[in-house]
Length: 311
Length: 264
Figure 1: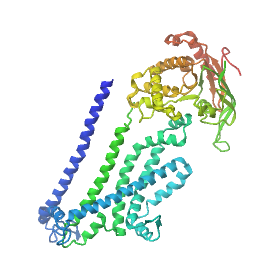
Figure 2 (figure 1 turned 30 degrees about the vertical axis):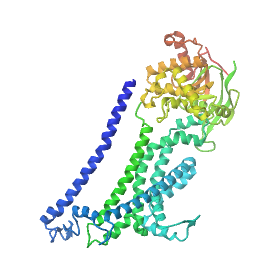
Figure 3 (figure 1 turned 90 degrees about the vertical axis):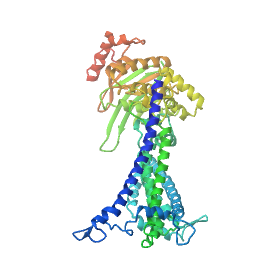
Figure 4 (figure 1 turned 180 degrees about the vertical axis):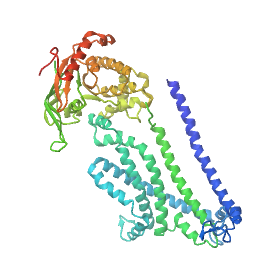
């Protein structure tokens, strides 16, 4: 019996290892394929179709992008841009600027996610505890997510001069965090609510039979039962936080984030068309960093709380 | 014989005042002596699970009086006077077997070493001493149910309330578990109230079988089994066993035979 269990664990470990490497390999392959497709279109397929003149036009619709440096800068130009100075003659290179902006946005997205998780879980706890709160609050939560972020962003900026709590001033970055949190709390609240409500009535009766308090029942039954529901919710929340932060950087004019950097690099589109892709790469890194963080957390919990299979 | 559980003229109505009003129990009287094994049997909707939950204070009676060990059910629940087992073993997947057994002790505030000792003692009792650190999903259905019984008995309650605990098991495992339960109850001198659908199960396990009927739930008769306490596999083939099965079956059909009938 024991030997079997040990063997099973060893096998599991190997499975986990190959499983963790495979997405990485596929990811790199997919990226390489995308870059190759881009390059071959602009170098060979595009010119062959004659998109530089008008041949990409079918029935008067322009279907294919022009294969020139302005519309489709070379991948190698993009890579070269990282090493170029930020502006002519400046000492800082583009990669430094992008890295710093990405880091700034990452911190904002993390703060947004943290606030979102805190608010989402608190909302789910209250909704689990009081049924009338769940019935009253849930429709509002759903409606809240239909408000376009772009419409809300300028509004939060106007709070700037009005809100000041214990020396804490509302600044533009606060708006970005609030809007990121606004988007990320929802999947957390819904996922946690489902998770907290997942124990069977028999499990709840069992806790009642021990005269366990509501909080003991929450801590020993509802919370551990909800962890399986929280991982997918965290994934959604993390990408929502990134999206919220990037969009609000642009709309509220938060200049030190990577979202705003895209906007300002776009304005150099004619002189340095490849430059904007460095900032786009920054947002990709930002998204990947958030996703990896969630995966790490998930793996930590998975190791400490083995998932059930059939008996 | 001192009484472990007294149920006196208990009524239970669900959704009183609504159109969905259901009279689950009407004028129910049951006395269970200390160390006695009493089964509740009857068709679906006869209120046997409701009666069990009233004794457990998971529900409150609409009228009537219930006492557990001479206390109110609420006080008995707060004192963890009883343990409970359900049809689903309901072990927590994220806890080891030993930690599952320790759950009621944790809630009582026992310290870690004492809890562990008791969990190991209970594992001995249910004959799974080497599975303390296994996870629930590594056990078979019968083993999981044994752990659920160990958990129910962990704080050494004087009363065990069981709601079709073997209902999800296959026939072979089921008979084996019945024998195990009798052995455990004899070893711990626990009083048991046992809800079941199975007539042979009720007869094999019980000192008395309480036969109930539905709409509203009431007790139609109480059959004293009177089998030898030291039951074994031979008991299942004895004539008296079959006679009692017939008696319970007839009582369920509504025309109880005279012998062993217990009019209250």
